[in-house]
Image (cartoon, rainbow, N blue to C red):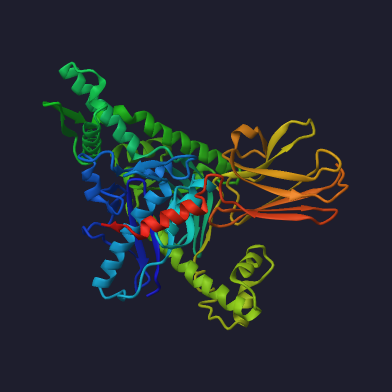
Length: 558
């Protein structure tokens, strides 16, 4: 079997999948016999770490040692948690979730005789919300590296779900909407599917909106009802153990209300017990504005799609994915608002399965690139760049390298996947009125790989260098206020002596399929140039990465 896997690293639950001998994507069970693993980490000590259901339950007794919803903080500037005397960033905490699902998958495959004792899962594709920027994607990749994995790519969750759907049902051309409401993030993506091709039209959403927000509304309601009946003040939410117990009770009540009209919830604090009965009607009332937020974001996405020639009338169906989309209020409201066929599509597993399909195709495709690179005496990276830029005919080169082509297509190209950028990328510069602006060079929802070029000029004669402050933003406009952008890195170009203000400096951005950004800047008179591949300003330092890997390798994860 080809040891490549897809991992859905979720805010609340994670899972891992692979392609079986029949070419079907399969999600592997964890040690507890479940297909999904709670993304909860219990730091019992500096070397004893528990991940999953046991960690989630331990939160009641050890609230300060259990971390949940860490995905919401990944890539966030300056964020860290002190656990057993060690400051840990989200990348390291997330790595333990990855280690757990990978270890359990290896054990499962060995029990089935599909993985040798000396074989290990190394090559993976990890998914992330479509709205993740460079910082979050880099941090997600770093989590994989700390866990000892080779991260082949980071792909968008709704794209992964659409890959699963497109491979299963590719008999006709259709445009679908993937409404992905997970535990901590919401993505809405329009995708065109036809035989042999899955094309993302545009994407939108909010990576701080998800099932946890529904849980929090229930939690606040339970606390208010307790306080109303007992006459206590707000201290019930200040007790860490009670807060954790209420959090778990809120999630259970939410799930129960997907099947029943009422959910009884006992609230215990300081020896007093109150039984709160939460009805589905009340639950819907408490969370109505959250659902409305997803509808508004969907309408915003439709506006963006219209700029690319697609309208709401082109959509044949809406696919609900993500565990939180199982709430009845979601399907009911989506149907009501858009009047389209709405179906639940493998909400818990489709993302991991799509990542596995993508990983398998990447693996096969890389074999082709490797053979071409060997023949030409160059590197895979150089071959790939020429293919991406249209400078090389891969079909022709593959035939000359004697790489087998199935059905006229390269291995791994039976389904072509075309993604888009979820952000705009640009650099700060002064306009003709000497006002500092952010000039977007790659615009949000541009097809990947995307390339854009713009020309800039020195602000004064004999200028020694220019510094490019590169930013990402959610704006689709070409020129915006710098405050709307978030810095992801800088690059500096040394200029030749005697440079004048009319010297053109050509700046090219290239955004690859995984959403990572490359810059090339060239001074056109003397030929001075600079290249940069952006690691973010908040990425782990080499020492932090080394320390995290050392701690991870010395830790026991259960």
